[in-house]
Amino acid sequence: MPSCIECGGALFYDRELKHYTCSSCGATYTSQDLLIEREKRFNAKFEEERKKRRREEYLEWWLSSKQ
Image (cartoon, rainbow, N blue to C red):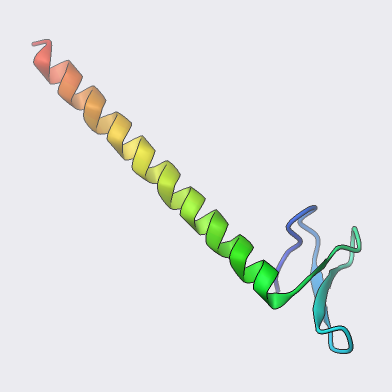
């Protein structure tokens, strides 16, 4: 079950509106909105891991040049 982008609450699908509605804050999302948000979060996580790996590689290089 998907969770709300704003508050993290449970989303329920409304067949009449063809939208997901948050049970906590009442926000509504389309399937496309949720897909785009999921993709943004995945890309952000991937980018953060890439930056962390580059920092570690640089630190390793820097420390090895000091010996």
